[in-house]
Image (cartoon, rainbow, N blue to C red):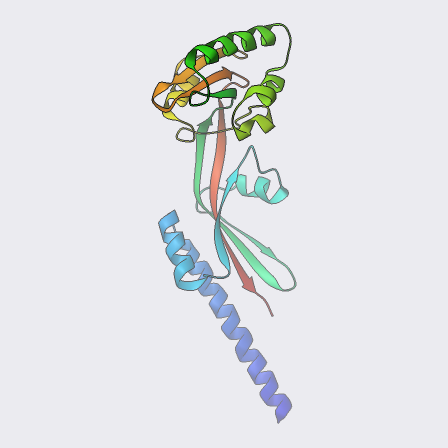
Length: 213
């Protein structure tokens, strides 16, 4: 009798689990926006789900490569002995990215005359063969100097507006060195055009983890 009840309970539990999983996949099919995905997480999977952003330049794993091959709305499923993981592509975009290196000089610490003289000296040093990264590491007055002044790839809205405008709108050639001033904040820059603009694909992915029995 006990064995029969145990089998019945196990069978009903399995049916219930499969039904819940079917409901999840049906619910996933109706999700079309990031807002809907966030609400889905809040309502049903607060502890077992998350929205990730994958950038094709930064993320090179096999999973990321597989997800980038999918179209918006597609779902990828992976199973292990203990769980099922579902990935739904909720957004897929291509954005323009930019990348430079810079030396930041603080007008609150030095006069504009001193800063301009220093920038002239730095340009001469660069033209004489000293790498811009070495100059940034030595002279830049912010934490980015530890990276040789490299900004990494960035999109519009990531940098001060005046700096972005000079980088994006002034059509600088590769390896140009140029000056950018933001007098209202006493921020002064020497910028090195280290990379050409690049279109980079990004996807937003809803990940859901379901336990398996």
